Length: 165
Image (cartoon, rainbow, N blue to C red; front, side):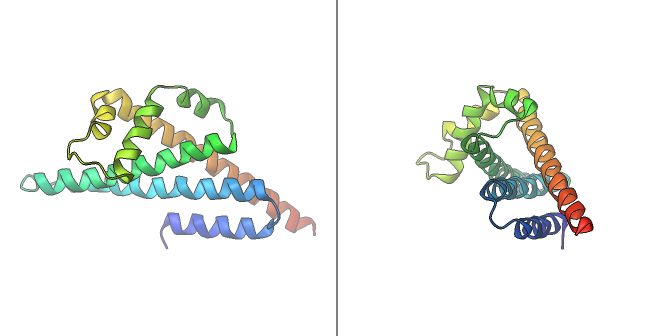
């Protein structure tokens, strides 16, 4: 099992320990989307290290696939964060950026058919410059930090409860 499989299995175990806690269920569900975004980000960066000079088309197209699914999955986490009314100072500050709408439009371009190959939804985020790419990475890191801390705290509480029983 890779790290994501291990983390998902831990989430399932923790969730089973409190089956009647809808708030916990909601945060675990959203955390799963964060892990899916992690997987796509990992595959994207792994792909970047495998470039050969004779492989420009393959490199570009496959890189775009991984990046697009990563960005799309990350926007699902943004939607869930807002829907669940979660709060964290670092994440909330990042979500105050106009780049959130660029990420939303990018996700829409990925997961809703677009008639134009070079649809603006794909390019507006990229044309916003390196700062946008860094913003996406920072947002992802902060979501990951939040969910890993949340899950670690739940695991610690579960272990303490089991030890006292």
